[in-house]
Image (tube, rainbow, N blue to C red; front, side):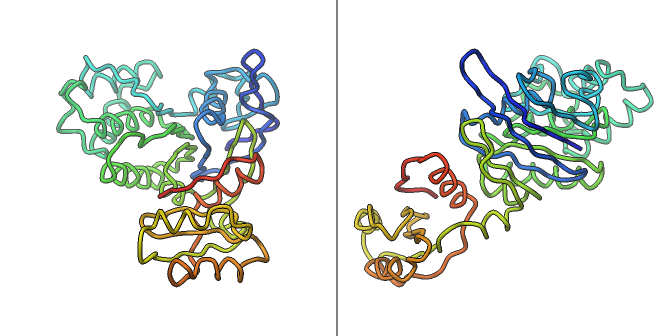
Length: 309
């Protein structure tokens, strides 16, 4: 559904995206992860024809993003980080305006409008001005708007940014339902690693370049070094400080109030002895955050973080 080959983008002397290549299959949920400024939004903007690539090529639904921009735009829905709804209009008016812009036939428009507003639980609020909506309601309305014209691919740029955990979970429930009903392919960025776990495949981008790609399980299985965890009997920050700089450890950080370390490959026994000062070390399942921090450190010498989670 999406094919990207050596795609690049420059802004003057700044190379924001550096020859990335990947593909996304039909009906897949593909997560694009990385820190702020890594090139995630720039990549999405090129795939959605909002920016022209400086190098390489990409196709969406078989259409070239540089040479067939109108065809690409008819194939996609897009939900931005920041809301683009008109606050002075009602929910229904916002959707109607979008339907007119995309030339959705009248008979399809009315059925589709009711169907999507009901799906995101906004049918009873269809006549209310958007300025009265909460952040979660606006995000649900934007998702409905992005789907009004039956796109093949839905692009979501930080779809739950700034929302509370309950609303974030509800958004994901809507997306799961929509994926099943609409046969959607979803391409999304997120900073939330619990959301990334729900993706079929992931790609990590750092400083404009891809550093890893695979399923969540594959990426965690490729993590070098064993994760150890212990519950310090005293001050967890003091326990963490004692482990800083130990050569047997690739990383040491706090996971809530528990102490976690990443043992260097081949030095697990030494790491376990070090951890035993702070409690009984136990093996722990690596998280995607562990994977990304480890990859970033190895690929780009990212400084050690003292605490996460």
